[in-house]
Length: 157
Picture 1 (cartoon, one colour):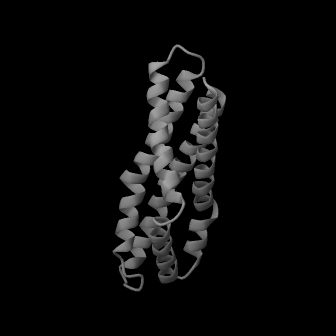
Picture 2: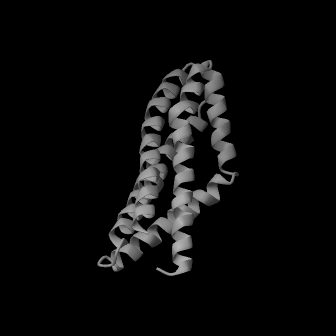
């Protein structure tokens, strides 16, 4: 691997580690903290988080790492017989499926459904309860996938 490739791979591993940290933070204590608030406040806080994150540094990192993980997966598949290539391919696929696809297929629709809820409405209680359980479950998948990809990229270098 060239110096540029090695640097890029290290950057990707670090970026995956950062993403894993973001997801772990939510799984470990942010969601529990929101759940500890009165329901309307917890919903309103999560709605705000979901709006703010779309305009934050998170989004370019999310998009860049998603694209780069596919590049690494394809590169690893085409160079399968070379040292470390299978680990890069597997890491890229784990990250793309476990982080990106999971986000698009599960977390974003849950966020959209929560955005449509009036935090003070009586039906918000059931929506919030389901949201906390389901969103956090899928967020665990994102945290584990990001962590696994980070490790595979480091070992596969």
